Length: 254
Image (cartoon, rainbow, N blue to C red; front, side, top):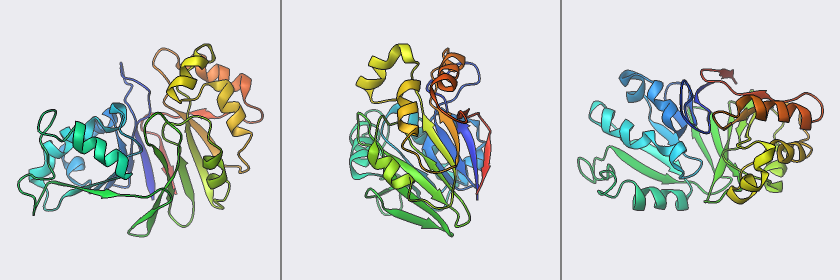
């Protein structure tokens, strides 16, 4: 099982792309602007999209992707998320006003796209790969995901702030090799981090004290223009081995 980082930034500009990960050739975890890095052939191979939450930087490419390759496929693209997140997509994106409803195109019996709700803690098994939703704490309904090949695991926090439930779940994973967690703001913007339910370096340091494992930790969702500052503050705040910055096109073997 291989996970490739298509985008991991909190914004765009230059080579920065918003959150999206490609699992093997057929699964996306989030679908931000990083999906635009893929060719039409690669896009057409994607059968499953797991969404952490409804914010635009995590879903922006779904409408374009299904429009671009829907006619090239012989089965619908399946979008997985919480019931609340799927309702937001249906009401505010695929509503014929912002974008056509591809769950009805070309018709409701044979659509280009379908929805599948996941309960918190629910697991989808795809050819031996286990994908489980984990708790997140954000301003809209949100989850993270635990990806498990059987040999090793990776957890992606999604967008989140302080969250004891997340660490209770993560600390039970015996084969955890990688942990990707967000830090969206620098310490000078702690008030903004708190009100928007993100993390800053001082908050991250407190959260990582709750982590009992020894997985490698990587930081996502850094804001453009504050990459170096935020990573420097993380090094100053976090005890022990500091987390590394997640990079576009980085790959993880599980």
